[in-house]
Image (cartoon, rainbow, N blue to C red; front, side, top):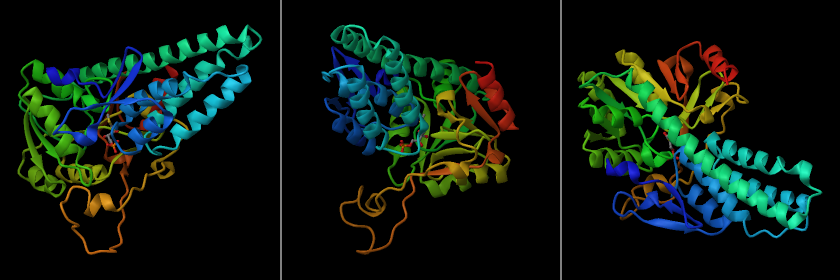
Length: 358
Ligand code: MRU
């Protein structure tokens, strides 16, 4: 499947390239990231989006932003590194993979602290090599995690099933395969013949522009619906399972994902349809106790009434409320698919266990 080779972030011949997802489905354009401002802007404007892909972009982005630094000594390098790290961390607040990846990069620099007395120029070179290797590792691990979630996820699905998904948790939201779309790709290869319904996902249309685009290219039977049609397709008996991604899961199993996800979960509960959330362990935030503690990003109201329209679709000066995510309470999540296995309630316990096993 060709579409699986379209990576959201590439690092080739010393260049960091980001697939500009705001131009999809019309154009497949890669933008070179040369400065920290380029990386910040790409994340903020959703040129690169989806929690795991944001993590991958943060890793390479941090490397690219500090590779020209010529510091006086280790402390000076660390100070400059932290300035860039904190700046990139301010791009979007909800997807924990951003902070998780930036913290990994920081831990990489700190591993050299004990050698701060070594000849500095050589050490600085070594640190930069290690930072690039760490960014590569984040990408490689995510690809493996997605493949594994795909295999675990497929055990929950049967050939011919009708599946509803919200937003885009596909290959371009991750290093490869996607989280909740991974089992659909793997199943498709094995002739599962799924019938997928993609919510368009207002206001930024990740379902219409990205999920429908991905699945169509893969030759998976896909029907696009408006968000407010989820209930009728469930009532019609066309949906056997809901699969969604996650931006941050609290340690009690409450999961933040694209705005509208919690409504889909509540509907699925009402209709007795299993609701599966796909959550790599990099998206589980054990420092967050419950969904109430998750910072929900608020975005400009223009995204609601202007962005995709030729002229404004609301009266001038109208008040808007545009939260980018909502939290699905753990009680509506039938199972959480991670790369280490499938978790069932009570999530507080099953989440604790997979981290203990690490
Ligand atoms: O605002 P976005 O497009 O970054 O939101 C993306 C989502 O909500 C995805 O479902 C989530 O990040 C999981 S991606 C594997």
